[in-house]
Image 1: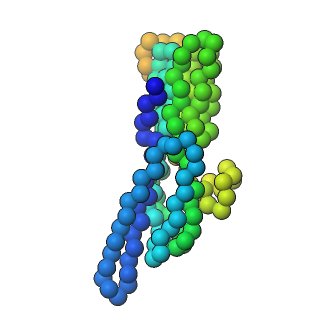
Image 2: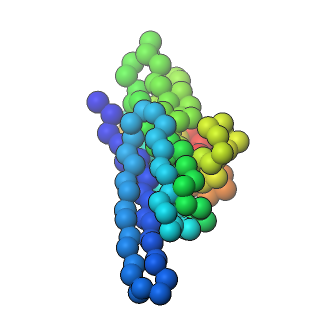
Image 3: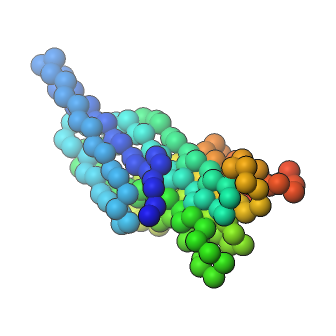
Length: 180
C-alpha cells in the first residue's frame, strides 16, 4: 500500500466586493486522484493563494525516498478562467528484483536496481494540458536507493528549488535519486 506525504494542492480564493466592505474567502483542497482536476475561478476573484506539495519518492530496499517539494505563492487569475490541477502520487517502494518500482503519477521516474520509484509532481496548468502549460510546479522526491541499512545513506533527493536535491549514495558523493 502506498502512503502519500504532502501530495495535495490547496487554493485559497478571496472575493472582495468593493464599496460594501464585504470579504469572502474559500479554500479548495485537491488531493491525489490519478487524473487531471479542474478549477474554475469564481466571479470577483483576481488572485488565488497556492500551496502545492509534490509527492514523496518510494523507499528503496533499505533507504527512504526523498520528500516532495513545496510551492507557496499568489497567482494572478481572471474570473471564469479554468485551472488544470495535477496532484502527484507517491512512488512505489522496492518490492523485489523482478518487479519494477513505478514512479508516482504525474512524472515520477521509475526505480531500478533495488531503488524506489520517484514521487510525482503537483502542478497547475493554464491554457492547455501539455507540460509546456505548467505555470506552478512542486517537484516530487527521488526514489530511495539500495545499499545501506541507514535510511540516509542512499535516500532519494528532496524535491524543490530550481532543481531538486541530489540523492545520497553510500559509495559516492554525486548522489542518486535526484528530486524534482
